[in-house]
Structure formats: C-alpha cells, structure tokens
Length: 438
Ligand SMILES: *Cc1c(COP(=O)(O)O)cnc(C)c1O
Image (cartoon, rainbow, N blue to C red; front, side, top):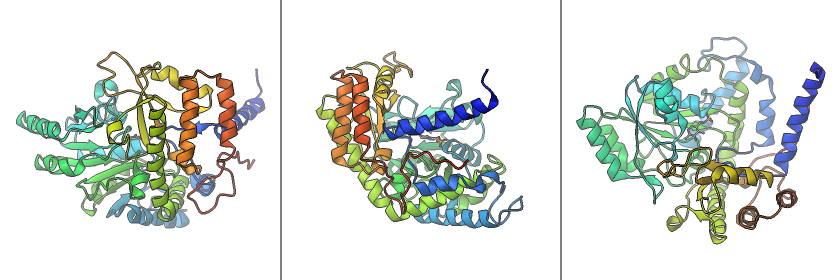
C-alpha cells in the first residue's frame, strides 16, 4: 500500500508526465487551446479561493475589493470584443452558459430547435432520451435543425418548412440554437432569424467553438445577424482559461443575470474571470492576426491532407471557414481506432460522428469520422508550411503504416521548434513548462 506521501508524489509525477507528453505532441483537438503564461499565472492566484456571489459591486460576500474591479474590467473588455450591450462572465463553462440561457428564455416542454449530435450539435442541446442537457435537465423538447450533408450547413428552406409545420401543429419552436461542435461554416442566422422570431422564438447562438474567431473578426457576427443571445466557452478558439460567458442585449440583461445567479452558479471561479480578462486584452491586441492565421492554417491542413488521399469533407467549398475540419476516414478504418493509433504517434485528434453515421449503423465509439482543429498549433506559432508537415505525419501513420514509435520520435523532434505561446504580450515561460511553486 502506498503511503499518503507516495500518493501525493505520484500525482505530481503524473502531472509532469502529462506536461512532457504535450510538449512533444501535436495537439489537434478542436475544442482545446493553450493559454498564455499570463493566463496560467492568474489561475494560480488567491482569486481561486474566494467567493463573490452576485453582480460586481452588489456582492453577497466581503473581500471582493479587487475581485470586483477585475470582473468589471472583464465585462468591459468582452463588450468591446463582441460589441455587446450585455455580458455576463460568471458562467463557469459553456454548458453552464447554455443552462442559464435556457433558464432565461424557456419553460419545460417548450420546443428547442438545434442540430443533432451526428450533425455537429452539442450534448447541451440534446434530447432527453440521449441524456442531453436541454432535454434531460431543462425538460425541453428537441426538434432537429435539418443539415445539408454536402454543404455541412443548416438547410434554410427545410428549416423554414419545419418551423411552419411545427407552428401548424400548435407547437412552434420557442428557442432556436444555432452553433455547433463541428462548425466549419457560418450558420444562416441572418436567413432564419426572422422566420424564428415570427413564430415567437428566441434566437440563440452557441459560440463555444468559434468565440475566438468572432472576437478576431474572422467569422459571422451573431448579434448583428439577428441573434438575441450568444453563449460561449472561453478556451476553444478563444484562448482563455476554461470558463464561459453570455452575450446579449440590454433588454434581456435582468433575466440573464438572474438565470446565472442564483440560478446556475454560487462561486464563479474568480481566478478564471481574471484569466479571461487577461485573455480579452490579448485578444483585443492580437485577435485579428491570430484568427486569420487559424483559418489559413485550417484550410492549409485540409488541403494537404486531401492531396495525400484523405477524404476531407466540403472540398468543393474550400473545406472550412473556421478552425475545424471533418474527415471521412472509413477508407482507412474507423474513427475510434484511428484516434488511438494517432495518439501512439503523439498526434492528438478526436473521433467524430459523420452526419450519416447513425443511419449507416456506426456509433460514437467507432464512428466514420475524425475531427481536427488548428487553434492550439496556431497559438504555438505554426503557419501553412507546418500544416503540410502535420499532414505528412498523419499520412505516415494512417496510409504508410510507419512504425508508431518512429513517428512519435519525429513528432517530438518537430515540436522542438514550437515551444512558445504566440499572440500574447509575454511568453518567457514555455507553453507546456511544468511550473512548481511547492
Ligand atoms: C464545447 C461546447 C460546449 C460546452 O462547453 P464547455 O465549456 O466545455 O462546458 C457547448 N456548446 C458547444 C457547441 C460546444 O462545442
């Protein structure tokens, strides 16, 4: 039996091993990113040990003198980044932001329209039968937004028809959730907002994945296109700490504030609010350059994989307008096995359902697709030429069946040139350096 001290040492040993592994790997998970050393520093501060229930300036707890100043600044910078009238930075994640949004705008048994999970939708807008947050937690009835498989986007005409059909049955949608976890092209918010509003629905936009691209002016601007509210994660294309936020209009401020607190959070991870504030300043300064490089890199990676024989979807429209690409991998195996094989070669991606997978009898453990995102490698300073090198590593593993330990060693060697975080004010500490303060 290990002693408590040995258990304790083991944890740090595992953490250090993790840092070393990521330092030597190519991180391509579309929902992940690497924060700057400045953001990491905020996460180790005493803010993370405090409570500040309520709105800054009207707290339930004492001790918030400096916490309030930071949170006000966070709100102010987020408003500037998104040109939003109202911002709530207290949701502790994207899921919690969506829960607060549902609380503010819906009642149990209302109809929510969103993309299904195989079509790129997120579990927060999933049906009750699937354990999805909207159905299982909020009691909403989920109707799917129709996806055009070829265009990898919401089908506008079919959606309009479905809204009319639901309205005719006396069950019009109460809330429409645009946005997705596989989100290569801007959604037709502008084309559909009026159709939803005309039946009394609120138009929501889940910007979890694309928040950094919107802030960097490289993607659609949901609030200007007709969205009433947008929720986001602060750590996917946005390079902050893991947290969430809500953007909306002043007229919805009171109900959203109440939905977040006391509805959804008690403490709201004040160290992460500080980290988000720092990330906002970085985004204001470097966001445009960063986001435009992300889109260039995603297109370059897709093109390089396509040229090496991979079936990257939506080739006819340039593969992607965001950070993410989706690949039909069925020629080479199943997504689950491919994910495991690539991981052994230090290439970290995730398996992903293709829109037609369920109909073809595949399931989440062994789907037909893999997803790759380039946010993190972009933040490490990689550009289009490095995307070709990454595609070559992937080809060696999947098509050439090269020895995995050999590829892993070559990946580690390649990574030696990319150890600093870019698009930030200070980067003295390397991206994955294990920082010890014990
Ligand atoms: C990741 C994601 C979320 C949840 O975000 P967390 O911050 O992980 O809670 C919500 N919606 C979509 C579309 C996502 O991809």
